[in-house]
Length: 146
Image 1 (cartoon, rainbow, N blue to C red):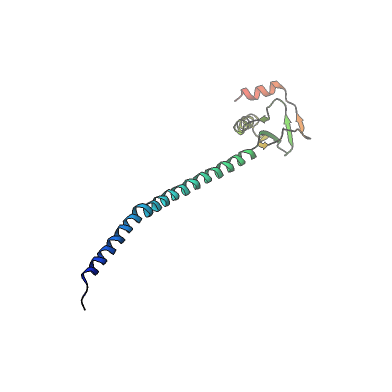
Image 2 (cartoon, rainbow, N blue to C red):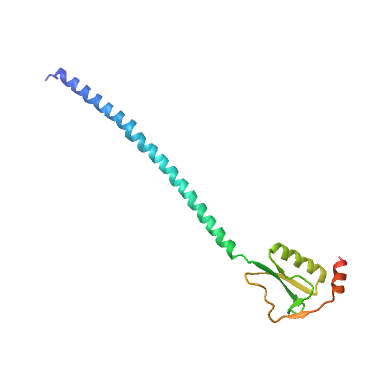
């Protein structure tokens, strides 16, 4: 059985057509699909990062709104009774200032009174507390002895 000569020509033409079709598909379609998938992957990562940052900002703002707006120094005597000392500052806007004054008053009054910093979102109400009256002279003497 002999193979006709034109059969090799037909196989060559078909192979060349498939080669051209493959290279055209690779350059025009497959390259575009691969570049799109790379860009799409990058966009998904970028969108994920943006969503994460938005959630983080939301949680931070929500937490900041819950922080106290005022800080109060609560004075307790040696018996555990809440009292108000005249002549000392007890309401503050920042925790650092309240803590600093609390330590200052603790140094002045030593073990006679305890000073605790308490945060509150309401204005300071006096309630039913005992008021201890100290003369300004006694207060200045204690402060100058430091």
